[in-house]
Amino acid sequence: MGKEVACGFHCIKAKNIGVTIGQDEILKNVNLHIHCKELTVIIGRNGAGKTTLLKALLGEVKHTGSIEFVDTKEHIARKLRIGYVPQSINVEKHMPTTVYDLFASYISNTPIWLKKDKKAETKIKSSLRNFGVESLIDKSIGDLSGGEMQRVLLAISTYNEPNLLILDEPISGIDKNGIAVFFEYINKLKKEHDMSIILVSHDLDLVEKYADRVILLDKTILKEGTPVDVFSSTEFKRVFE
Image (cartoon, helix red, strand yellow):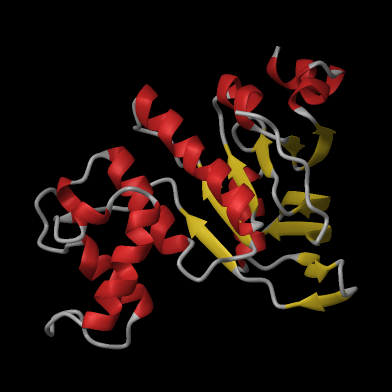
């Protein structure tokens, strides 16, 4: 997969992000500059604050600093639309909730226990088709494989064409072929939808292969740049070797 150059039409800027929980300083002075059409991967040891940073970006934890979405073409700040795919969702095997039910609960005001909303069903099928899982619309989510579930969650999270897509360890439990397919879709989102993507991963081989930019985090940003820049740095060696 070739690396795509950021288009420069917009960017997401997080300035001086800090998170303190109780007496523990989880993040301090984190500054991010995320461009569209880039896959930025956050790496770091356990406890480095990776998930907390995602939660700060999502507005789920109280933080200091600021986060803004800047349209560099018109030089104005706009409201940031965020899509989010968690590492996993808790579902019971053979639970009756279908893919349609799960998707409709996000996009429709019609109670999902009523009959299908035809307009909603058409939109859902279209979104699922983008990720090759339209045929799963009536399948129980408890019967989905890890790869199928991730593609369904990607379809849901990108339904409203977010500016920023956040992925928290999205490939855990997916086999090798499924991982390749997953990153094909990520590349498609970058290229065709002008999307900024942030992904947290522990798999450094995949990071080296697919990331446009890497951020090494340990409460603050220790190093950022291309995979080659980060992996060859003394900061990386200090953390991982």
